[in-house]
Image (cartoon, rainbow, N blue to C red; front, side):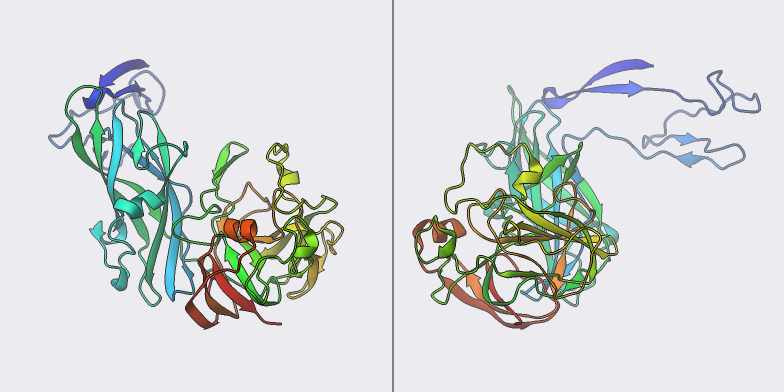
Length: 437
């Protein structure tokens, strides 16, 4: 094996390893002792090679070093939301492999199943024709929160959060890819504008699971829900056991407002001030209890200790229940009241059955239910899957941030849209909803 250093524009350097493997050994001959055929590169750069003894030659694709590489975390799955649109929420890791400073100017999502044509949302060929300006800023999350958005230093990676939306009766693309337009600014010399198509991902056709309500009653707010701008849940990509996961992509923190649209009434550090504390948590589907945790203490509301040890990930979940609801899906409930978990691992549960009570245990500064559907039996080392509730009423969108509601005790400001009965839809972030019962 020989290592060659290949220098490219803007001072970026790649180490390229070349290795020659011969089918039947290292003597330069195939299994029959004949010399292996070799052919010089064609004018297009493709190299005809012998695929196998007796087979017709095949052609290797042209290989080109690119100054940007994007990789999807997981294939997007469609879900119908309360805006009557189908959402494809997914993430890309984007790497600047050069020694120049990269500034991303524009990203166009392409329907790769239709020849990489830029799409139109209403036809089903694509959700957004492009992201740029403030929208691109909202989709970009660098590892350094103080860094300039859309600007990647040499050898730096960024996370991009997409939400492609389509008319609910549109034919969805089966493959998406992305055209990046960006500027590279070297330490010396003039900047250049570049275009790279990358981040190819398939779109799954698996329907979102239909669920019953996790609680009963009115005025539940879906803080941290999907989809764009990316919430604190969506941006919580975690490296667990050597692999990145998005365990909170579609997670919701449910908090119930009182009849005056306040989160609490009384001292903010008293559990009794939060009227929804202790609300029944319901099984959203028939299933088998996979795991539970109980006995973790409640936190003092609005007084979360910033010095607490968060290295024990299990403690951060508080008291929880994980239900195997079948077909590779697990319903996860976190932060329950200590001593309230009413089930054990292996128990069969029925939809609507009370399994625990809403609490304030674990890494939390206000009572709430953290709810998610996961693709494997793990609370953090799993990917969040989309889901819909079979029946609920949406009563508008809360425009006051949760942090402000807790800090001031003020009444939430509610935009009255959207509103009305919903069937088999996913509530979007910060919406005010009512479950049956």
